Amino acid sequence: GNGFFVEEREKKVALVGGGVGVFPLISVLRQYQGKKEISAYIGYRNKDAVCGIEEFTKATRFVGVTDDGSYGEKMNAVQAFQADLEKGNRPDVVLACGPTPMLRALKAVVERENLQCYVSLEERMGCGIGACLVCVCDMTSGQHARVCKDGPVFNSRDISL
Image (cartoon, rainbow, N blue to C red):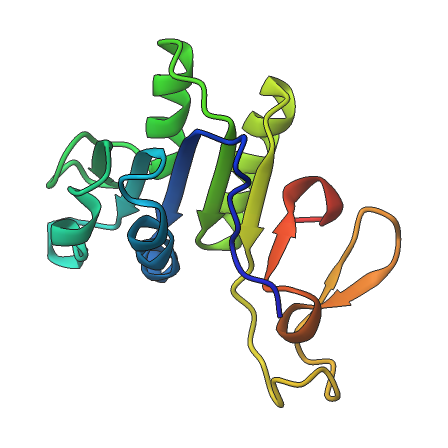
């Protein structure tokens, strides 16, 4: 499959993650830390679900939030990202992973702001080699893609959420 990749010209990277989607973003942070300006917007259900803080605090900017306000502000990761956008903190590329409703909301924001965004989809996978078609997702072109083989990372403009 395809993983996250940041091009040389992309200096400012925004990581937007929620739920179990925070974990793939840790590897991105480790790979590009010190090489890129990284802002991490990470959302959790509540303070008991907070994890990965020791990694995410290594980002240039870290914003941790919870749905109930028990850790950080009461908002989700997309709202935290959008609040920074409104303050003029505009990234060159956005990398995201999380539940589909979160990715759908993020896609609306990045399309409105004309930002480049790549999302890692969380789909159930049966075989992991593209044969069983359990993980198929819809593309905006009307075609279908296998998350395990063609993804899991896709340009947000190319997928239907």
